[in-house]
Image (cartoon, rainbow, N blue to C red; front, side):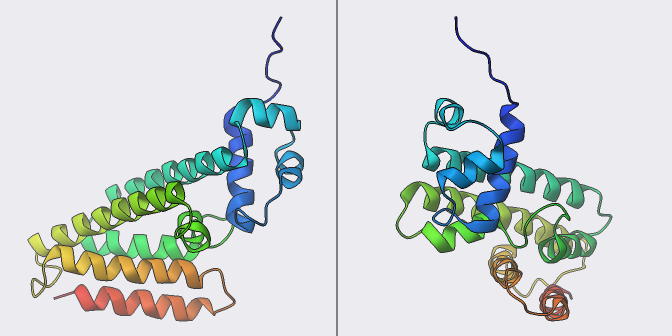
Amino acid sequence: MARSKEFEESAVLEKAMKLFWEQGYEKTSMNDLVEHMGIHRRSLYDTFTDKHTLFLKAIDRFGERFNARMSAGVKQSETAEQALKFVFQYMIHGDEDVPPGCMVVNSAVELGIRDEEVDAKATEAFAKAEQLVREIVFWGQQNGEFTREYEAEELAEYLHNALVGIRVMKRTSLPQEKLERIADVSIRFVKK
């Protein structure tokens, strides 16, 4: 008779995601994961196969969480400028219960060049984020908030690059005020 799982897979995946997010892939050992997730090593292997597979699932979990938060915040915005400000503020401040920065950016920097699966996930996540920014810019151009001097695609690439930079700098001891200035200048750049 097979033993039933004594843990909620979603809850332990959330714990693994936060640990990988905080420490990175290579610094996180299997012992760290077992201890942090609160499950037996055998259960970890039975459920997630191996550390790399668990890491990829953690990236997916991060993406689901991030995309849901971005979508909800943008939908609540009354103007394109408000939506863009929300995106920048979320990148700077994030949620209280998670490590600083962005798991996808961290993973791309750590492993992207030598791990095809991580690179593919990061590339896909960046494309989704840039698409969201492009939609906000297009919205702002249509209602006269944002400049039409550049195509929405070009402005989205520029803004996404600033957002990735902020997510990297968020992992350092740079003052929050500097990140706020970068966000303000980026938003002013696209305004009419």
